[in-house]
Length: 383
Ligand SMILES: [Zn+2]
Ligand SMILES: [Zn+2]
Image (cartoon, rainbow, N blue to C red; front, side, top):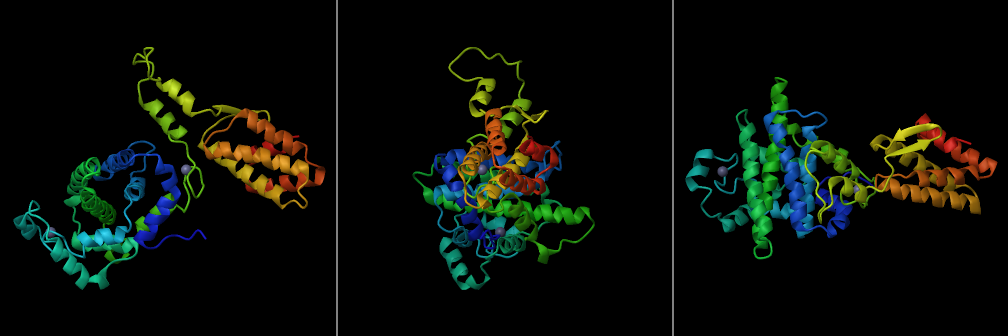
């Protein structure tokens, strides 16, 4: 059952179930770099700057998911225990809730943390330990309430923590425990960013922050991005290529192609790399129309392929022709899962569907007609 996770630990396991296989051959550093890349996108929230086609709010659930992926790759057993060890409903430095700025500065962040004391607080107050992701966010709001002035401070604190986390990643082999402490701080300031985002939203709408309602937004946003399967390839265990074709396409638009010299050398040029990673066709013909292969078209084709395959599987007594058609569609689905499609595979599917006996074909086509847009349906139906 694909139910939405509730607890923070449950979320952590779920996101890793989708991506841990994919991440098996990635290094900790590579995953950390991706995490840093997404955190960089959070600066748009702090600065209020807008970029066309970029939705800053999406970086919050993404950053959280990459934090899960990083902790998963390192092998953290339980993220809730890890966070509670440092933040047992108090600021670990001043041991207050809400944290006391003056006191915190006087004990000094340079001073060593009193881990024994934190452990005692955590044991005494274990009844307060949050479970849901939203409750963890609320806990951080209660420890570090937000005001208008916090907006930039938040992001600079997060950036500082990401720097320290980078050091922990670099020295992971010798000081794994350092990673545990720094990953926790990064989480705390990610929660801070989400709290600030909700505070600013309420403020901009001339409302007071509904502190009791905190936590709901991120749970919805995370589920929208990570609904128990990969948002790109739509499988519960991600099968995406190492670099998404869409990412390469975006990069290709951002760099000055044709201006930088690309001398013959041992390294691939961007054009060559695009070629290597993308063996799909840039354009395909469906019926009499030509279509640019973009995310939309791929999605429609995927819906069409899924619906036809399901219809074929429901046919009584799977005769040879139905099996052959299902196999051809299976190949198409494999390509689509990599966000690619070739004319060759498209033709093969159409030929196989065309060869089906009348009633079987009728059944598949009527299933399709209700599943996908007209243009794509026409392709599957064309005689
Ligand atoms: Zn404090
Ligand atoms: Zn995927």
